[in-house]
Length: 194
Image (cartoon, rainbow, N blue to C red; front, side):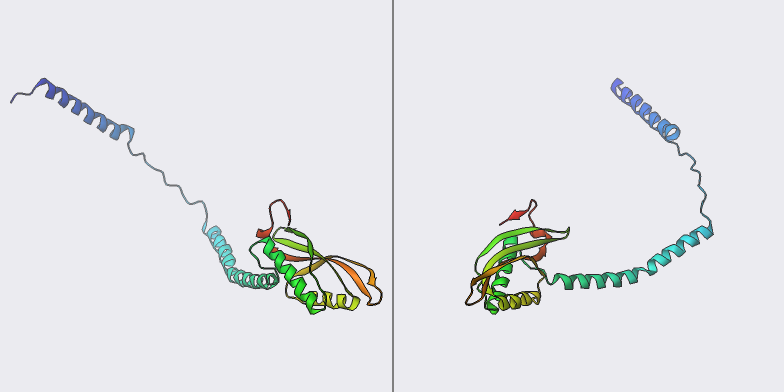
């Protein structure tokens, strides 16, 4: 059997490659003896940590009950918010509330002015509208009492009462600004007047 020079060169290269791999494996990447680190904590320290964790775990059920109570209270309070998808819809609800409450008390409330949506604290928004109307003083008192009894969270921001315009019927001119609470998502980023 005759081996050519090309095969001899390949055999030498193969031998050198195998030798290099063995040297790398046995010398360079040899397993180093890993030293085992002893436990620093003692049994009493571990028992103390376990006791702290047990106490913390025992309070979880109490915290869950408290969270449920607080969530239920928040939901009951937020039931009075004006529910709408946009600020304009919330303002329309407020206007409709003013109109129906006014009509129930014999007051004709038609024109709305000074529409606003602005932040109310950090978690809510405030939608407000101003109206002008003429009525008798007893109608105004009944109207304000009816507004106080609606389930929505409303607030009178400003009320201005001018003297009688019709002395015979004893009517007064009223300028009323009313606000309702809405979700923070309805508040524009820079403030808005619609």
